[in-house]
Image (cartoon, helix red, strand yellow):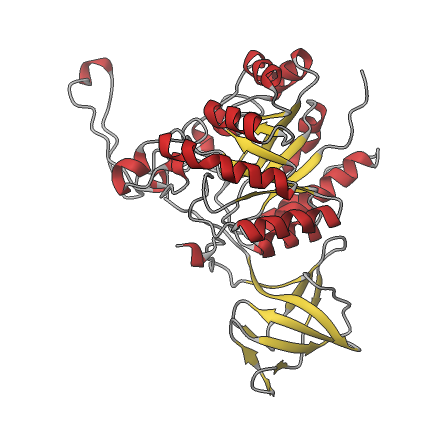
Length: 422
């Protein structure tokens, strides 16, 4: 069998800062959305000018950008979508991610040189559907999350000449990749139009009236609560070698609405795993998973890769269950003098706290600073607040886009979602 090229590490990017950070920490490509036609309507996304800038920036690094067109389009959108599609081809996007058959045809007609990737929203779970998309002109099929490793291997055997992409990390939907009515019903926010309210995380009471004789029982709140639809997050770092060996071409991280700390940390750890695999001397490192637990996440699950899911893949205890052991406090802007660095403060931080430097290649470095020089006030301070530009002095070597974090007190946690998107 022909040796396959190195698998692609594909990261989410909800805005330009996240895109640059993902590439800085080792992503090979990013998937992004414009201001319309994508399934992250609550994310800040990219306007047309920013789309062009993002694509040009990626190409300057030898990397790629895929643009999402994965809504289930209605008639009105079909009418004005061609103009946007033509722009994507003009800007040099590396692919459009499409779920709807009509949108697929629009891309073929109006941007014949634009590669098409079939979205996970198309729910491809068998080799025949993958083969059909390929014969229609798709260059890549993003498989549904509800796939085992053996099923993926079978698809690769049956359809060897199309790219296969799979999700390896992030939130799991309680339905087949987003085909859910809860958000629409309760809040009027359509999950298939990009504005899901994640109602599946709420506490529910379900009454099985008239079916008592069949053994059905009521699902009602107890002292712990009943979160019957609440899926755990996907994490595959412990068996990423098996996913690579299944013959996939791209490993996708979920989370366009997550923070740069989340995105950078996940990219870095999977990049470390891929580097180990392709070194020819692969060995799982427990530190990869340890670092993935520093970000805001629900409890982790293997998803469907190792077989059917069970009650262990659901979290019935709480709606959010976020666990996070570290908080991002700053990102490095530039080196301004010997041992002096300009940083952007993102969360309040005190000089008494131990800082940890997170860089793309090396291990975390711990250090402290004597104080912060507030560039606006032009004075030294023992603590600084968000949205401050400060200068610190340290012997630790840092570079632009490196991150500074602090360890949270035990029992303290907060969400890693971008608050400005809500």
